[in-house]
Length: 102
Image (cartoon, rainbow, N blue to C red; front, side):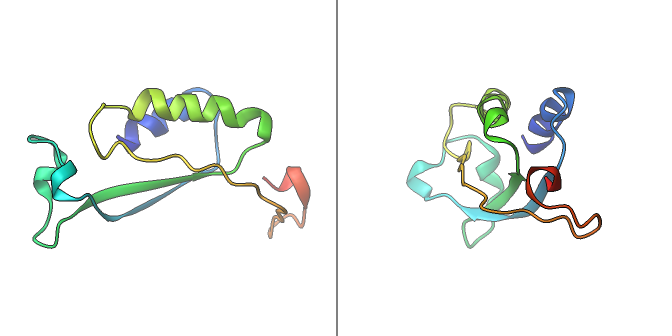
């Protein structure tokens, strides 16, 4: 799903996405009968991807809709979207601060 979401974001000009690969836990009772969760390891963990995007407030709604549209399967494990305020940003390379650092 991460590739599908990334392609959709890039298509719409959204840049600056960080992707983290990891493993996550979905309780057995919530797992669908046939799904990618069938590849869970013995400890119950499955492969997951975490996307981080920093954007302006005005772009956040569009980004959320893109993710929902392209990550939704209707099954447990579709993921969560968290929206957090960023109080400050500073670009190490350019020494820019504020919105231009994003």
